[in-house]
Amino acid sequence: MKLTTTSAIVLSAVLATTFASTQAVAAEPDYTLSYNIGATTDYRFRSIAQTSFKPAVQAGADFAHKSGVYAGVWGSNVNWVKDFAGATDGSLEIDLYGGYKGELAKGLGFDVGVIAYLYPSNNAATNANTTEVYAALTYGLVTAKYSRSVTNFVANADSTGSQYLEAAATFDLGNGFSVTPHVGRQLIPNQASPADYTDFSLTFTKDFGNGLTASVAGVGTDAKDGFYKVGAVDNLGKTGLVVGVKYSF
Image 1 (cartoon, rainbow, N blue to C red):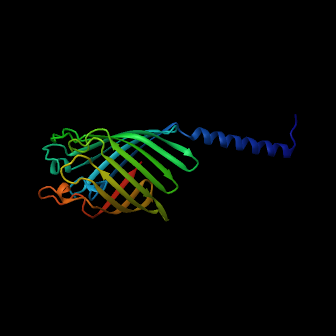
Image 2 (spheres, rainbow, N blue to C red; image 1 turned 45 degrees about the vertical axis):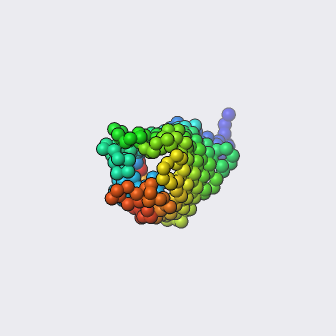
Image 3 (cartoon, rainbow, N blue to C red; image 1 turned 90 degrees about the vertical axis):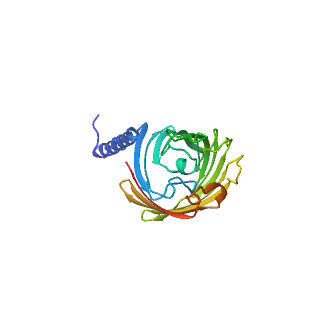
């Protein structure tokens, strides 16, 4: 069959579109692996200082499957196991986590998983290693998350079932800048001194491109001295300013 010039043009356009679509589908990988390394002036976990207000170096790796399954590992130096829990060893934190995320409805995302906070060789009176399960919902800019420990919580005896509820939102300010307000409530049962507290933070982030980001955060809590101040170390939940930088690749 002989094609007219018009038919040939139409056929070429169809083939080109089909080829582009095929290439786009083929380009979607089954999974991705990413890595990150960074540093911070003060490692805060739920606004509680983990390095006794000293700097930390951190690194991690993440696996994400297109099905929604993910897993990762992350590490940082810490001081609290020695300063707060009275251990003579335990200067490293390694987090292992995995879960599944997806959409419940258009615009409504979910994330469920488990995370283990490990402190190798720690010899605290109550083992500092902690495992939590968590569930989160995201709608638009806002994420709400609930975490619950299934072991004792960070070296606190008889603290299985500790809970953390949090909410955060990220606002794009343009030109690579964003701001994230956050509020959370930590509940630790069966402690002699009041251990429950509310924390808050406001984080400004600048994305420089090519995987490099920097952040400045104001953090604070209403944590009580009776539980969160030990010896010469100040209240680990005191208000402070945290500056960080991270490179992802």
